Length: 106
Length: 402
Image (cartoon, rainbow over all chains, first blue to last red):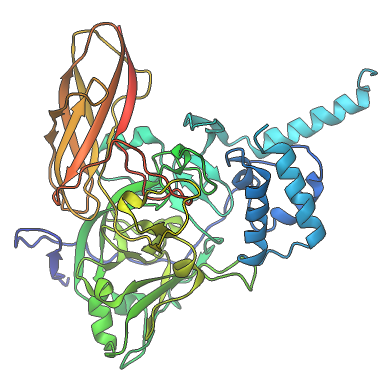
């Protein structure tokens, strides 16, 4: 068996320690669990489900603090412009309405 | 208004049952008591190769280490290590066909198999991996983003090969100014921005930057970057590209979205600005800063009046070692030194322990603060920036004294 040279880096001493040998790599496949959350009822909830869940689960939205409408509008714009979410202008407006109605400060 | 019909009630019950079945694996988890609320999270036990984790987001997965797990030692078990993906993680890794490509401003392009990568000298380093936005949920005013508690961090013994050795094999051309890294994950929408991060060439060549093939002596879990990931000790996790398969040497600074627009911090002390403050220079986030935590007690713990209470926890220096950890039982008016545990290297968590005198019955505000070997101490006042990055305020914990 080949003894692998080892070096401890970031140590102030010159002590060399054995680095663990390279692991045997095996091909792997994983399956992720189903989404744990759904969008609660609210205006345009169907539009939320149809658009937003293509890329991320509902808890990404539901776990956010209550945000003002303008902040939600900016988030929806980021999803469209930066992450290229294929959301129409009409649906984007409906999504902001849902978020402002269900997840904004009173 | 008439009473709901039997049919409507049955439909409602049916939808509740459906809900219950989709979330049956999610148990009640912590409530982080974020300012303004909405800090309760379930626990998830059904992610591959992971134990019970705080579920921040199912898809793409965002899993937080339950804070009580940090009390078991300085190294975070692989199955408890936090998980954060921007795009869907790879679901398959074929280790026979996997290649790490090194290209761009190099003398020789490389396409390394995993067994070829194993031929480089193996090195090992203990290092904390912490999300840039760890503890974001505590920002006030709140900011959008992953609403982490304090468990978006972990410490492991990483084994692998030096990035600089791989770069030397490729022969970096003199015109290279940065190395850009990307992994197997791809945008869900084809035009979306691939997750790519860069280090300037001097940082990339530092000997502690490694390509890790193992974590705590075992293969990396798929959700932590199997088969290999970049490890950038002392810097935030955003640079630690998972399932690393591409290194590109650039002849100009990287202007991709993830470097130029995302993950920017104000170029101010503690990355701290006022909400709405204008005229701030923004720079890519980089080095970590000192933090410390009490791990053996939770909020509301009951301790005996005028007793000597045992405290224990973890500290990190950021991009250097821990010089000192102090604790307070009076909210930070008076401090005493804690004893430091075994030194696992400057980039590791360091355990600390001490005993502290409890006051008369009532409420006591415990506090802990770390000073790193550069002399930086955790600030008393929390920082604020619009992305919720780099929180390292002195942690306080209210306990009941009886």
